[in-house]
Image (cartoon, rainbow, N blue to C red; front, side):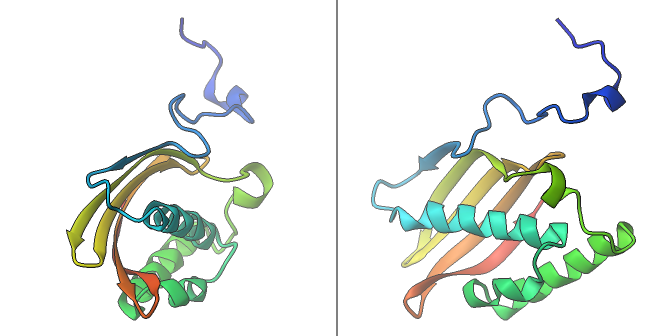
Length: 147
């Protein structure tokens, strides 16, 4: 049965789809994928949400991403904040953290993996695709696409 309440009366109601949760499901195409790859991808998704919400600066991504990815995130964040008139996002007051849907990991080459993540950011479901490469003893985001 449909909920007949108007949208403005749904404030405070969790609008995340029922199959989303704190961990979601992980699909790995190859059983040899290191467990830190999905963990790194999810941590990066959480960091991106904080950056886009205005809670952290884009430079916090520098340690785990290439300069090109960091610049891309900084530009997108500036556009999002401009659209919101510089206000920090709703995130701190109403949103405790993302609810993850599925995370899919595929090998993309020697020491490189591609991850796609679905998550609910408190307002809508988002998709994130990233390429992770093992460089200088850490996983680094070398490509990033957000939807």
